[in-house]
Image (cartoon, rainbow, N blue to C red):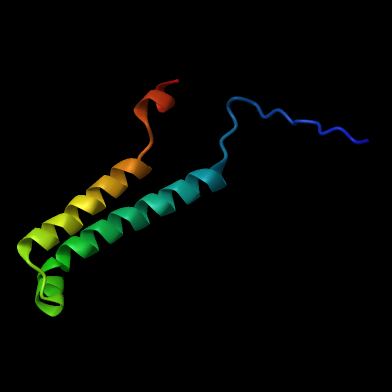
Length: 77
């Protein structure tokens, strides 16, 4: 039976691919939020939405973004 051996990385080592991935996802998230917000007048006219429905879309976008945000208590350690 083989046993798994964990390889320890130095504390000062930075894992750049992970940082690039997080940065890219953050950029896409911010771009999506600003694009949908700019399209509210177009969505209202083409989909015949009320201002309440547009407000609900904005509310759900913000709630979803807050669920995906990192919990500050976990980040502080």
